[in-house]
Image 1 (cartoon, rainbow, N blue to C red):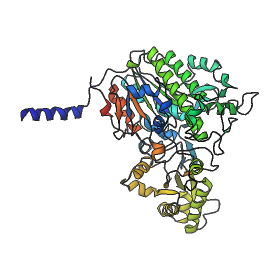
Image 2 (image 1 turned 90 degrees about the horizontal axis):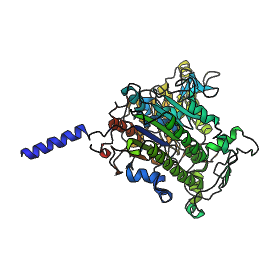
Image 3 (image 1 turned 180 degrees about the horizontal axis):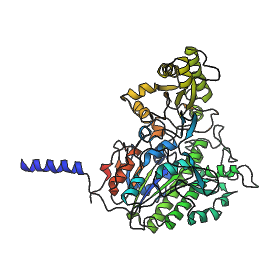
Length: 548
């Protein structure tokens, strides 16, 4: 009896305390692949080499059921979750943009009127709109600011929101120049200036993007040349794709648009990351450092060609090689045994509706234009309340699946925002394309009973969200020209992403336990002994932590 009681007590204590922590890593590397649904790992695995995704999957812990639990599956919202462990209802990043009532204008997620670009001219960006802290912020605090946190991407929002508020620097690309912001720096470091001056980026002018696999490998994909792909910037809709922006004689702004919408964009970022690792001596300074790298080219390619295109297969295979190159570099320079590596994504993607109809013509899939949605809401308000005062509209703005009512116009007419919101909700719910619509008051008092409700609630911020929030049914979306793919829905094709951890403290294997990218930050904290991010919602992935 005593032995059974003692064993039960020890088991209970182990659950409370968790696994013992491994030695602190010299470097934490967080890799985000923009627009990379989990199913790519399964659908394209036959084409991967041994050193990239397979190296992570064979030696690390892969969480096969990792899905975002927010409704707005877009770049900013996803990257804000990764290292904060919190959703937009807490950290405020409810989308790539939202409407600011006080300024009566749309606000970009990382806009900052007080900052300037460093490295070129122009207005800067910063994490000032982000609320709370990230793993990197807590790492800096815990180390007495000796730890370095460096974050980079082709996109400003990806680099900034992964890096957090206390990062040493965040870098992103503006045409041929990696830049930062006066929020972090006054001048670029010598190594970054040297990279910009090297001509590495402009050297891609005139190159051609060709397939890397034999033609037979693409047999399961859509046709290579279809009218619902976006072949702008001179790329065309079929291989080979010239990288010159439509003008083969000289470099224009469209060249950079074409370059970033190709695998070469990721290759450039990889080269920049290697420079940062070497010059900043990350992982070699006797303290834990953090490097965040977000590969954005996958998102640009995915939007243009869709998840069933030859281009996305080719892009994924090339990304596997980029990951292999980065892991090999880390192994040579620092030793992977001294690193803690995480790979995930900010969101997935929906199939192009026209692709689904091409395979199954009776499929009821499609889009509503922003104009038609706006007209629906305007009409509902005018039918109930008549025309507003001259020069006013009942709807102040519509963005990010949010409807913002004109509170001034409603007040002048003696109409409560709650009453007006109910009319808009009813109008939206009447449309076949709409899955759900809620007023602000409904969401504030809602106790979620379904996954969809929970995801909508996680994307609702009391200050930044609108008076009405809505979402489409699966495979419907808001769009105008019908070309290319999109995301932003609260469904698994957009929410289910890879989550892989590799390091000395990680127990390798495949884990089908319910999980989320929000679990990454608290797990990194548990592995390094750093305080959890301030508003974390995620859990520690204890099932994959190894005892000492």
